[in-house]
Image 1 (spheres, rainbow, N blue to C red):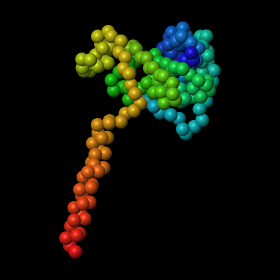
Image 2: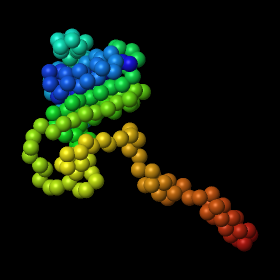
Image 3: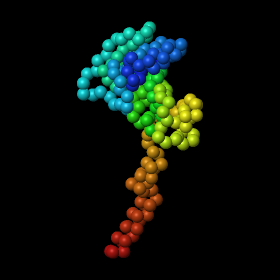
Image 4: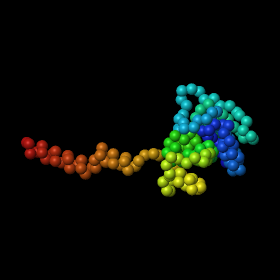
Length: 194
């Protein structure tokens, strides 16, 4: 199994090496990560300058640093390595819970894998004992972590709100039966005028 490891904390983050060590028990591992921290970059990609990558020393792992975002790293890694079975992103130094999934570069690396046809999993861990300003609602991912559980949240790429889309389509495209009645009444009124 080919496993690509990335993150948003940068190639020299201790979390990426821990994840690579664990993953190496299951397959061939390659690390491709940003050359500097790219936290909160969300799913940004580089389009205005060339990307550079260089080989770096990360224990026994085949590792490369990239002057780009986490999504860039995964796209470049999957292109250069060929077939990749799984992309693991992290271990992020700080929790990616709740609304932070919208701006997390760690999560974006896993999403980029899914966009390119591979499975992606993002990992994060708490690095501080401080709690947020407000308590978490029961049953949420933050609540689980605050109660010493592991939180696993399956996500999908399709963000379409199907219910709102159906309502919008119903307003802009009336049902065929209503359109037929309208045409019939127009036809009758014309006959009366003659």
